[in-house]
Length: 59
Image (cartoon, rainbow, N blue to C red; front, side, top):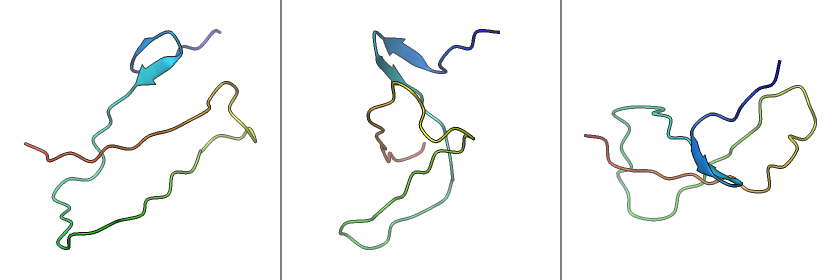
């Protein structure tokens, strides 16, 4: 079975927006650190070169 990437994409770039936690606030101005970890059984996921994270205000 051939699998496809989730989300929308053009060429090699895909965007997948996933609501994660709601009602979380960042009360202090400044820099925050986030850690992203892959959850697959393979050591490396082929063809993935970069991952980004965007925080936006929920409506």
